[in-house]
Length: 209
Image 1 (cartoon, rainbow, N blue to C red):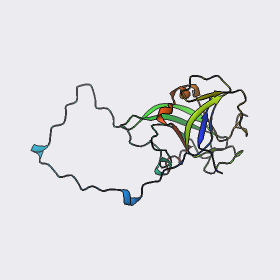
Image 2: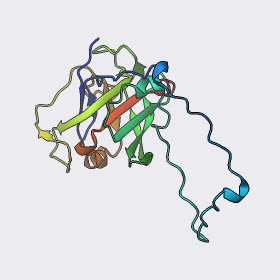
Image 3: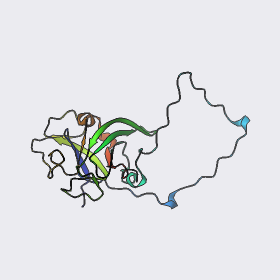
Image 4: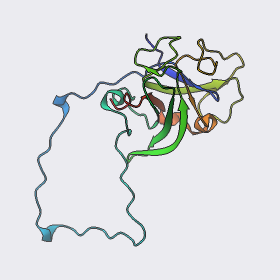
């Protein structure tokens, strides 16, 4: 099934619409291997800068999204600096966690983590409407909306009492590749369109591919 290119975020749930357009994974021919740096004598080696007492050096931030493997990383659009990484507890389970990351230029900094709920039957790499599973993949987050008033979303927000989605979830709620995150209002206020946010989601094994 071909999915659209966006996801709609609302106070009740995050409705996943479409896989983000992927970018080509670099080929082996494009990788440059540099020769080892020349060894300097101990006398020529500059002394390390002293660390102030009681002020340990800050930890090094990861250069890529933690827990996300090369296959899904290739689908993250260039220019993305904010990502909600959703990790399900299992392929056929409806529970998991969601962590909001931001690339501050020196690496991906982890923000808050919330409990998350996905489709009743778990996850699918080939999502179909009505299968009660959430799709594995990367989806852009460009708009928000719902039946409740705008809680302060930084994304464009469409307040409409007519919002509905075909399908039924584990609690009887409308569901079509849906994801529910605790503290959704907090998430809506944190997503910044200037950072080109995406959601990377799947069961525990899938995001690490």
